[in-house]
Image (cartoon, rainbow, N blue to C red; front, side, top):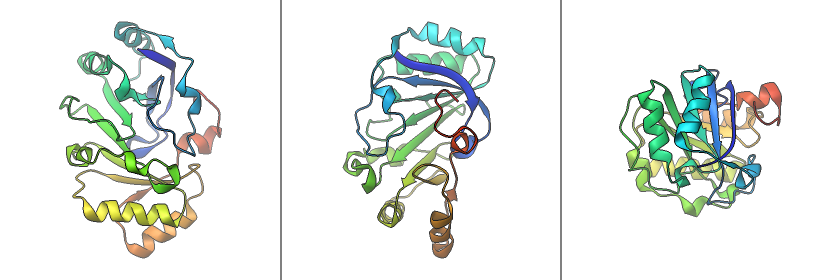
Length: 209
């Protein structure tokens, strides 16, 4: 496995926002989003075995673990490290861009799939694996990063055309300017959560937090 960094911080996104969490950021991504805020994860990682990752996570003594990237589903041993973490009684979140089939992931109450739907401003909206939308369940979450009105209308279309069975998150690009997005959601009475990126409110663009 190629690992960029392992660090402990507060979960900055989604339904577990604010929870102390150990993050494992993997190297490599199959997409090239225009506004990507983790482009440094494309290369430069270190080789680690699943056992080494587990040891470093357990040293931090935090029950919540987030596997992120890059795109963690590209890692050859991703299923092994998920199984190891679940067996050691961690709650695992895996963040994915939605372009890789999710069916191989285990069915566990302690696994939360956090899937992005890439909107037009990303330049990657055609890369979604749409069967993944049906794979998500009530303990998972679906996220839209919204840059403008076009993105918002695209997100509404995706929600209208699919039966989504999990919490839905909308966050503005940059993670902090919420007013315009909030006004659209309130105007449409859309059943979603408008959330910031908490880590950016606290630490800005600093890495490893």
